[in-house]
Image (cartoon, rainbow, N blue to C red; front, top):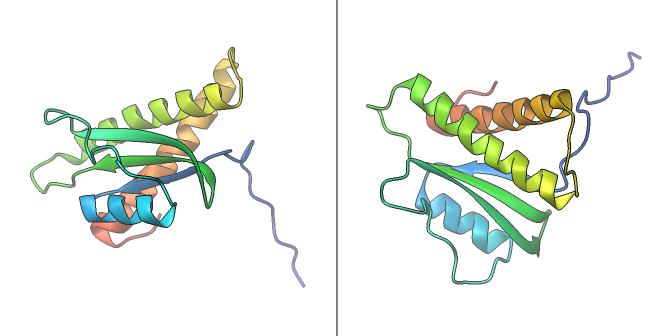
Length: 133
């Protein structure tokens, strides 16, 4: 028998992290996590292209972060990556505040944002292109 390697993550997130590419998907997440209404808007403002929601109400995973982005065929993939990385930074900021991390080291912060961004990008790729990283 061959042993399996453990996950290489530096730490497990105290929050569930996911991404939604449709408003219906977002509403399903809110319902499944028992988030009371009124729910926030899928994309917070009409001129925003993506939004990272932080929900403190305890759900299946405790606090949750739900990043929302509309996939559009005319949006350049580089723009999608930029938007998701931008939102990953907001997710990290909320997690850092939640765990009381006021002065994270540069490497801790960089690895955390990288891990969150890769998670969100992988989910975007799965939902939009049907491919898994």
